[in-house]
Length: 213
Ligand code: B12
Image (tube, rainbow, N blue to C red; front, side):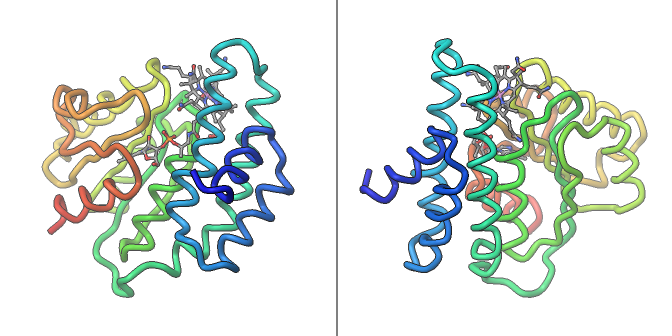
C-alpha cells in the first residue's frame, strides 16, 4: 500500500472525519485514481474497523465514527466519480436500495454512483427499503434493473422476498434483478432466482451492462 492509501485507511480507521475529507479532496487535486483510493484506501479502513469491532476492540460508537468518516470522504469524491463517467446518454433506468431492516448504505451508494457514472439513470431508494416499496417502485417507475444490497445475514433473505413478490405479482419477467453486499454470493443469487451477483461496484457495472445489453 502506498503511503497515501495508508493515510486514507488510517483516517477512516481512527474515525477522523476532517482528515478523511482532506485526503479525499487531495485525491481529486492530485488527479489520483478515485476508485483505487476508495477500494484500497478508505474501504480498507472501514473493513478493518469492522474487524476490530468484531474482536471487541472497538465499540459501536467507534465503528460509527469510522463509518461517518468514510461517508464524508465518499461525499467529497462523489462528483469526481460521476465526472469520470464515459456516457452522457441514459442507458436505462435502475432502481437500487438496501433491503428492509438493514441500514448499511456505504457500498450501495458506491454502486449507485458507479452505475450513474456509466450512463444509467439511477433512482436510489436509500437504506431499509421495505419489500412493498421495491414492488411499488417497479410498478410505477418500470425500471430495467433492480439492485438490492444486504450486509447482514439476517437481511439478505429480504432479497429473496422481493424477488418472490415480483413473481407473485407477475412482474418478474419485466425487470432484471442484481444482488450484492458482503454476505451474498453468486450461488446465493442463483438460489433465490436473481439474474446476477457482483462482488464490488466495478463488477456491478459490468453485470448491469451484460444484463441490459
Ligand atoms: C460500516 C459498518 C456499519 C455502520 C454502517 C454505516 C452505514 N451508513 O452504512 C454502522 C456502525 C451503522 C453499522 C451498524 C451495524 N452493523 Co455493521 N458493519 C459495517 C462494516 C464495518 C463495513 C460495511 C461497509 O460500509 N463496507 C465498505 C463498503 C464499500 O463495502 P460493502 O458494503 O461490502 O459494499 C461493496 C460490495 O459488498 C458490493 N455491494 C454492496 N451492495 C451491493 C449491491 C449490489 C446490487 C451489488 C451488485 C453490489 C453491492 O459493492 C460495494 C462496493 O465495492 C461491516 C464489516 C464488513 N466487512 O462489511 C459491518 C457489518 C456488516 N455489520 C455488522 C453488524 C452485525 C451490524 C449491526 C447489527 C451491529 C449492532 N449490533 O447494532 C448494525 C446493523 C443495524 C442494521 N439494522 O442494519 C456485521 C454483520 C454480520 C452478519 N454477517 O450479519 C458486519 C459484517 C461486522 C462484523 N464483522 O461482524 N455497521
